[in-house]
Image 1: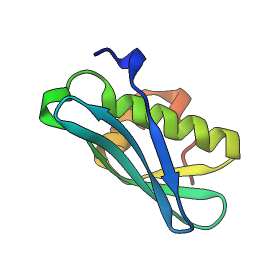
Image 2: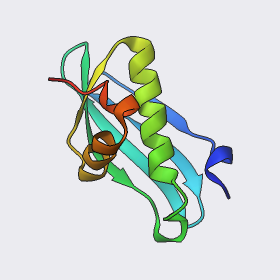
Image 3: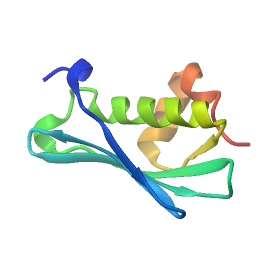
Length: 98
């Protein structure tokens, strides 16, 4: 498995949503809650131990950011992993909510 061939699913409701990918060891996920119409709070990422070190969480974040960009939504990176990734990737951090 490489980071390029991960199929990522997404579901959402009025309260928030979840991105997920089936990977060795189970489901990887990123969850978020909505804060109004133009901000989401990414509060959690998880990758099963068998799939760690393969950029799975990064791919989930990149997908969430791409979708936020398309909808003109800002992001509060509450999850420590996402906050760290935003600090090192300016292309992701530009979506950060003030």
